[in-house]
Every structure is written in structure tokens, then in C-alpha cells.
Length: 297
Image (cartoon, rainbow, N blue to C red; front, side, top):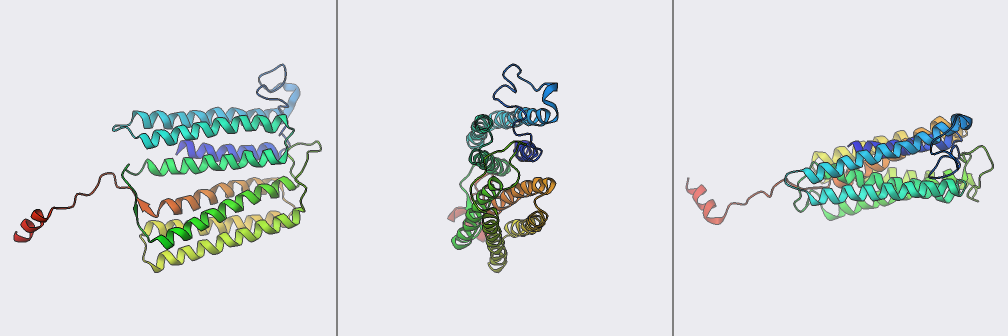
């Protein structure tokens, strides 16, 4: 859970770096300046914001390291959890390097978008890890039929596309991440924002359909609750998105929308993971002779 929380926190604080125009508060990498590893008083507020976000990466690494050590020390040892922990670690390291590239190329919007998408990948692995810690290591048992699983996967893909297009909206939009003239994605912002809204409505429609299908097939309460939670998150995120669009994307609302994007992604993944179970131990099925004995009794 700590690793998941920090994965979301690094996204939100990264958004704060951009929205305060502090993206080049530390103009180089891995040092903050050519002469100093840390921010200096001459760099002011922007240097503090950018350097603080960099330091949070170490907190994230500590949380991921904690997960790896806990998985490795567990009795019995869970190889699956250990591998998931290391997967988080390597994604964090890759994103740290990509973050340095973002600074070195002057906040190129394509690298900024990739930086966010890699953070979404980290959140996905962290969600799976968190879920697997509460399950056994046995083979998964489906709780619903294949058509429901396929509908859920379609919702996951649509949500992924929604988030990806959201990075294009940001890359073409008003918040460049620095007070200087930063290159923007050469697309009509209104058009790409409309595509983003259309995808959002598609995800909402799929989540509603999934919710009703789960009720219709009398699915276990877990998947139905996860589908309900996803729908509520989408409604709040949609309202926030429209408000920020019509109010010319104020910084605070954009930051909250980034948090909402993380929650939507977590919500849709939790729906998918709730469609199967992994018991801690295999339930023993009585043999035929045992069944006969029980019948005699």
C-alpha cells in the first residue's frame, strides 16, 4: 500500500512542479545545477519545488524497497510478490532517468507525456502487487463468465486510451511547465480536448454497462462494488474535467484532475482484479470413498 500511495503522490507532486512553472527549477540532471547537487537560494521557489519532487523519488524507492524486502522475508517465500516488487523498482529507475531526459530536453511535451505514462505503468504494477498480497499464490479462479471479463478488459483499454489522450491534451495546452517559451504539441487544443471528453463518455458508458451486467449475472458482491466505485470516481472526474475546461484550466483544478486520473486508473484495475480469486490454499475435494462414508453417517 505504501508503494501505491507513493506512486500516486509522485504523480501529483510532479503535476505541481509543472503547474507552478518549476519544471526547469533545477535546469540540469542529475545535479540541480552544474555546481550544486541540491537547490540553491538563488534558484528561489521554483528550485525548491523541482528539487523536492526529485527527493520524493527516494521516498518512493524506499517504499518499493520495503515491499521487496517484505516479500522476500515472508514465510513461505512468495516468488510472485518478489518479482512484482522488482518490477516496480525497475520502472521507478527508468522513470527517474526519463525525468532527467525531460529536463535536459527543455520539457519537450512528448517526453513529459511519456514520463506520465510510465508513472501510470508503475501504478498498475503497484495495484497488482497490493492485490496479490491479500491473495494466495494458487491459480486464479474466475468468478464471472468470459463475456464479462472481455467487457472489463475493453473498459481497461478504453481507460488507458483516455489517459494517453489526456497527456496529449496537456502537451498541447496552456501549462508548459516553465515560464519560458516551451514547445507544445502542434494540435488544436479544443479538438483534442473534445476527443478526450468523448473517450471519457465511452469509459463511463462501459462502466455503467459492466455494472448492470454484473448485477444481471448475479456476480459476487466484490466485483459489483468495484464497478460502482469506478462509476462514482468517473462521475467526479468528469465534472471536474468540464469545470476546468470552461474555467480556462486553472492550476489547482488541473492538479486535482491529475489525481483523479490516477484514481480512475486504480479503480478500473481493481474491477478487473476482482473478477477472479486466488485462495490461500486449494480446497480439498473429498474422495468418492469419503463421500460414501459421509453419506452412511
